Image (cartoon, rainbow over all chains, first blue to last red; front, side, top):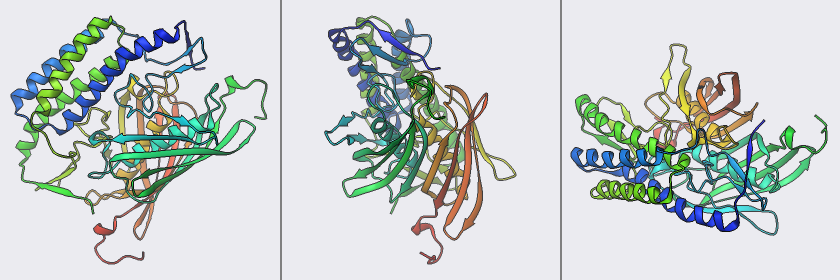
Amino acid sequence: MLEFTPENLSAADVERLRAVYEPLTRSVRALIDATIRTQVDFDVVAAAKAEIDSATARLQSKQLDGTFGIRYLSTGERMAWGNVAIGIRNPIAPPLEVHHDASGTVWCDFHLGAAYEGPPGHVHGGVAALILDHILGEAASDGVNPRFTGTISLRYVRATRLGHLHAEATTTRTDGVKTFAVGHLADDDGVTVQAEGVFILPRWARGQPGPE
Amino acid sequence: MLEFTPENLSAADVERLRAVYEPLTRSVRALIDATIRTQVDFDVVAAAKAEIDSATARLQSKQLDGTFGIRYLSTGERMAWGNVAIGIRNPIAPPLEVHHDASGTVWCDFHLGAAYEGPPGHVHGGVAALILDHILGEAASDGVNPRFTGTISLRYVRATRLGHLHAEATTTRTDGVKTFAVGHLADDDGVTVQAEGVFILPRWARGQPGPE
């Protein structure tokens, strides 16, 4: 059983927290990029490392025992701020900013730099899989209960260039606890990876005993 | 065409670079974790952010124009230090340390913490996909020429707990430019995600015109 933590926060509280943590996370993202690309002399690396270690010690002086988890606000809003794909407190997340349009399509435009590299200058195939898994899962979820990946298949049409990218997904049908979704990743020249998957409503989120 | 950069570095040069950059990258990984889990007061966040920005500016004072890419040493060794799965200069990489055993199985043991979260306390399904894509690709590659993912299918048996994990893969057959690989991800209680994929020898790496 997964723990989803209720939080007694107002919309104003959330905005205040966002205003503090988003800039911090953005700073760490810039540091990740610089760590990969730097060519400075070794003594400069050492000076930078000392500052990084000092910053880490400050942040660690009071911290959660475990992970960030997912918190539900009284408004019903989900705060998945630690999530590796969308988390605004997770420096690994690009982050994806997921939009839902009226037709039920879920999409996001985002940028991937040096930190997401596989083949030289190109997105790692596994990062494409991470993004498509997330975006298909968002399409398959109803906004209240998440649906988790049962199976996903990816077809790589060609290599995806690092840079500005687009991903989108939609559901094709729901059959009991299973929702079927399809989607793709694209760069400026069109579709690079196609995906299809089956997403499952977790047992604990089913209102009544299901067919399985 | 992908660019693989030859580097005129000796084994001693590589060790010297590794001794400088591995500790820097490890420090940034600790900072990523602290950024997600910190509960310090806002003024402490601000002080940490100032140090992070200062470190980033130092590292950016001389840097590569683009990404790290993949460099080949005169020994034939591949230096994929920027790679998002295995790169020792990439703070996003766990990093996977890939081993090859005598039977042709490729495996790695590694730890995933708060930064790789999807469902609370559990590995994001897309991170499982990233790791399996990489490890199946390593199994399918011959050590000289990489093979890139053509298709990959993942079946999620159950949620994967964050913590110590194991992934392994092996090839089942090669048919022309296509190599078939299977593998899985496991936590302490056994297999959590199964994968199978087809990996393609890129056109530019084929010795003579192939069947397609």
